[in-house]
Amino acid sequence: MDILVAGGHGQVALRLLKLLAADGHTARGLIRKPEQAEDLRAVGAVPVIGDLENDPSLSAYVEGADAVVFAAGAGPGSGPARKRTVDLGGAVKLADAAMDQKVNRYVMVSSIGAQDPASSGAMRPYLEAKAEADAYVVASGLDYTIVRPGHLTDDPGTGLVTVSRTLGNRGPIPRDDVAAVLAACLTTPATIGVTFELFAGETPIAEALRF
Image 1: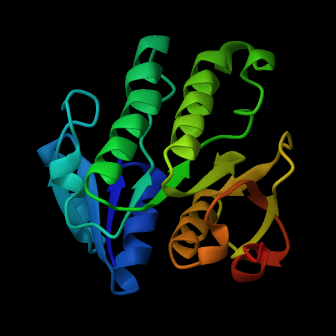
Image 2 (image 1 turned 45 degrees about the horizontal axis):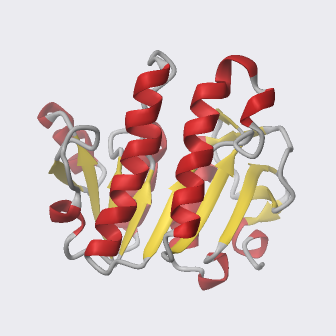
């Protein structure tokens, strides 16, 4: 497949692009800074230079793709305004571009807590943006999967996870395993139309995704 990953220089995204390229897919990463391109090439990915936040449309980047993944984020140092323009606005633009280009498959990296932003204190602006983005994608008619990982760690991946469609849980998950689950979702039709939380666990990924 040809897969476009928005936020292509992120820690999860780079891991995902590496896995996709290793599996023989055309793994394209949408990045804003040309100086990040070499990091993508180093993992076998194709850098695509574009501004998720400020470009009026992402259709030119999505063209030719079989699936898109939203793995972008304004980052912990950003204020509420950029949460709206990146975490929400970017996800909406990607969905609109996918619909425009007839690319039906959309995998979203969301967050635990997005089902109840009001109870999250300082994280509320971020989780509100994530919740609204998720709702937009669900309502879009695209073949979506929404993955809500727990607290991200740099521990080595194990390939063993816990997946829950009952929302409101807490727990850690290695970035390696998040990337592996995203890659698996793209080739697992059973994940279409599903929103789930993701944590470290004891179930092999392929088995955990048998919804």
